[in-house]
Image 1: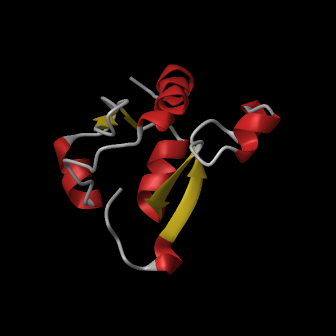
Image 2 (image 1 turned 60 degrees about the vertical axis):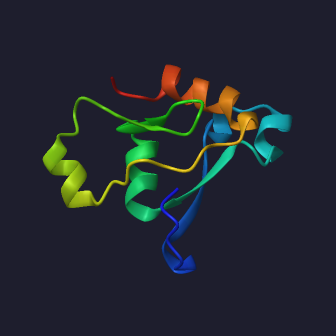
Length: 97
């Protein structure tokens, strides 16, 4: 997402949580997104999500000041279309509008 080139700070995050996924979804490579630590936490808590095209969506709970302080990037690279079903799940079930 951020093009960060420091492997120690990157986390492979499930989009649809493991406990809510079936066997196929758990092992599907498209049920994952590579995030830096702060974005991973924001994603897991539903404070950010992503549109089907990969554009980041911010919760109303995050202000422009938060975005600047956290270094939340805009715009992002285009997401593969195979991520769309998992991103739709995240927006419906996890994202705090």
